[in-house]
Length: 185
Image 1 (cartoon, rainbow, N blue to C red):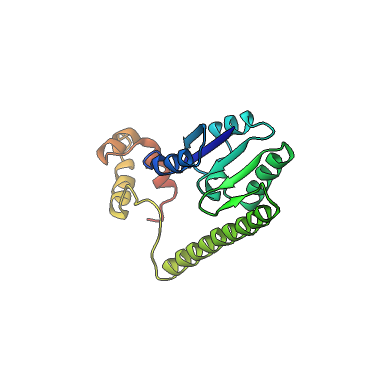
Image 2 (spheres, rainbow, N blue to C red):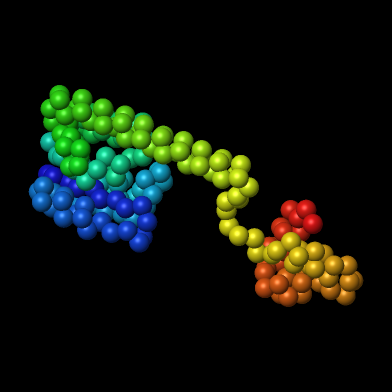
């Protein structure tokens, strides 16, 4: 039996392109899900791997659809091989049914992991350069420094509660407490 597995990282993405390619390759059954590859809990992948038997073939559109790290990819493909299941990746033209296909799988998997490591390094370097220029990442603050000072002044009044101050600034009490605790003003 030819089984396909399609995955996208978010709900807003679509598996249609992958499914069309898997059907064109003769996949009789296709498992699909919308979940990050870094998430180890992928229920559809677990079901897919569970149905595979000796003589079956698992086909994916690209290597990174199956796993995010070389370790994960090699682990899954090695498990498949031990069970007599062949593996195919359409974009990389990998077919582990042959010795050459196995070699190419390991080379491409190593290159894919190398590329992800480069992306991580470039991202970290970009963030460090932005911080060096005084830019800060993350979510914008709910309260400006002036609002924090005003909130502190309001709380000096014994008749004023934190809930009232939070409502005044349209934030939750939790946000107000965290902001006050982390405030330098």
